[in-house]
Each structure stands twice: as structure tokens, then as C-alpha cells.
Image (tube, rainbow, N blue to C red; front, side):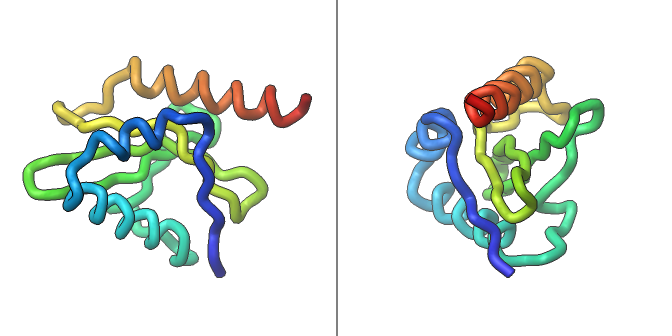
Length: 112
């Protein structure tokens, strides 16, 4: 069982390249968990309430918390949208809104 992970546009890569080497290694570790485990622990993947299929991949490194928005397409395909450094307890609504907008754009482009 192996999921395929792809990036929608450049947003995730922009986030990823802004991280230092150790933070990138931790992101890659968590993405390997998403890619390879049949049942992903909630510690690493959580559904965003009030959305239609938007998830956040959760990465902790030292005192830093990172979130990567994603969704599943055709079951075994994971689409990464955006990422950000979390600075408060609650995920910012503007970040969720942006990810939902990108998810809709993905599906619009897919049907063309």
C-alpha cells in the first residue's frame, strides 16, 4: 500500500524551501508516514471540520508546529496544497479558506 503524493501548483514547494534542513527532514518523515501507512494516526493527519475533505498534515519539530493542507483524490492520491508555520492554538481561518479555494481550483482544472 503506497499513496502517491503530488503538489498542486507551487504553494507547498514555496513553503518547503523556506524551511531549514532539519525542518525539511521532519516534513519528509511525516510525508513518508502519509505515503506508506494504511491508517495514519491523528497525530499526523486530521480532517478540518466544516470542510468537504480538507485535511491538515501535522508536523512538530522542536517548539515549531507546521501544517500542510491536503486532500485525497481517487483514494491513493494525496494532493498537497499549502503549508505554514502555526503560531497559535487555532488554525487561522484565512489559511483554511485559502486551502479550500485551491482545492476547488484543482477540481475545476481537472474537469477541463
